Image (tube, rainbow, N blue to C red):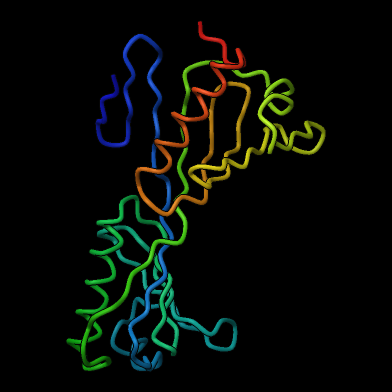
Length: 197
């Protein structure tokens, strides 16, 4: 039986699997040209150095995010911990741009590109045996202390460390890192590659 509590997945009878979303990257399309010079004048906190980088960076304290805005009307939002926070941040920026007369309609298409999460499986893992048993795994301890596993479903990339810690990248939906951690632990258990206690 599995219970979901925020960013934590509890499993009865075994150590809990703890998953925490660290960062969500989303692309945004407004369909309008945005004058970045006007944005930098209207929002003094914006970072805009066109000779160094073609985009403008607007940071929000709530929700804590950084959004790159380009003349084309495209944006990239980073730093959010939930999809809801991405939506809040973008809507806040769009409202501000519309209120200042920089854009007209204030609507956008938001698409999550990547979710990065950390996880703790609650056991220790033999990485050499794991790389051999799972396939689709790269492990070169002289170059990097973890194994890199390319999961087929969901299509995430997982960095696996001997202490049972994971970094999961490539997810497009918030539930994917949980599914990936749970699926990986099941495979490790089936192959006797994770040790508890």
